[in-house]
Length: 183
View 1: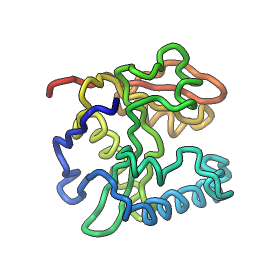
View 2: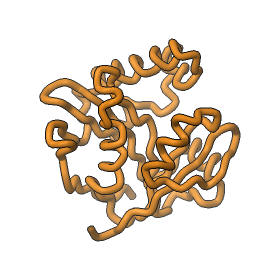
View 3: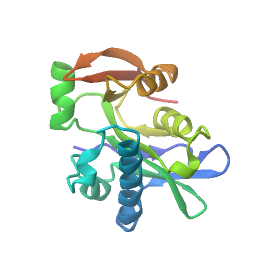
C-alpha cells in the first residue's frame, strides 16, 4: 500500500517551488526529459536514449498519475523534475537484489532532471537535497538511486551530496542515503 506523502518545504533557493506533478504537467515534463536526452546525446552519451526512440523505461505519464513525480518551477516555467518511487521497480530489484523488496523502507529516486537554462546554478543539488529533507514518505528511512558507473561527474555529484556508494551492478553505481523519519 502506498504511504502518504508530506511536502515539508515547497521552496528551493527562495525562488523555485516544488510540488507533486499533476496530469496536466505531463507534456511539460516529457519535453524536459527529451531536452535532457537530446543534450546527453550531443555530449556522446547514450543515457536516456530510449526517450529519443519513443521508449520511456520509467513510464513517466503513469508515474505522474500515481503521484511519483515532482516538479520544480520558477514561476510558471518548468525548471526541473524528479521521480520518487515508494515501491521498487523491476529495475530497482535487479540492481539492489535482496535489499529491494516490495515493503522496504526505501524511496527510489529516478530521472532527476534540470532544464538546461538552469544548469550550473545549483538547482540539481537543491532538488536532490529537497528529496531527502523537503519531503517525507511515511515509514521511509532511505533514499536509493543509481547512475551510470562510467560517468565520473554523476558519481561525484551523488557522493558529494551525502549519498553513499553501495556498489556496482550491470554497469550502474548504486547509492543510498539515510533520512530521518520524524524531522
